[in-house]
Length: 220
Image (cartoon, rainbow, N blue to C red; front, side, top):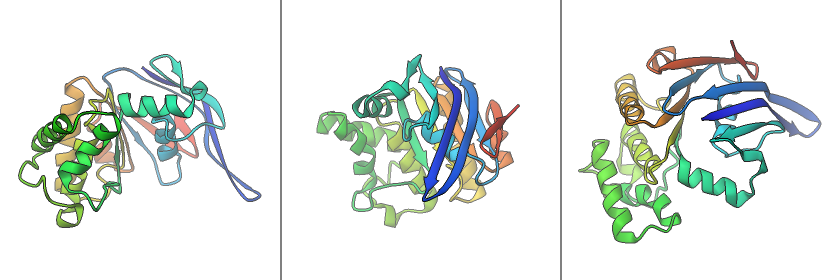
């Protein structure tokens, strides 16, 4: 289970303070599919970064499986990100000098998986998202939807329990967005916890539960 407790994040830019999160309390059960929806600047992505151990809170806490992530070292946080969490970003964040197979295999390289094993798994993951015939193409040779499916395959490379998507349909057309949501729904049916941030009400409606954010708060 994921739980936030009075989670607060303040960014300081010179003498200006921006309160991105304001005492957010949220529980996400194992195997749940939740969408977090709200306008730009509402704190959605900041909350996702906290849950995903990509950023640390100013105050409050994030618990993953009972572990207070704020008490972990950088190595401890990296271990949780590597072993428990798969990230899907709006901008894809693929390495443009690598082909699809190499991009998907990259997290397994950092996890110490043998080359033959990681390439075989990467090929299987790409086939599972419908890209079995595109494994040697680089991002510049692929459409936005294809790049996002590569990003999904990469997010699954280390078999995470939690899949986090920050506007995963934000840079693709409606048809491709629905395909991506089909994939995420399938991952949830496999038992994975799926957390998606979106500003699109139709996309959010496909999740099992929706939470709305405004001005750094989760609305009841």
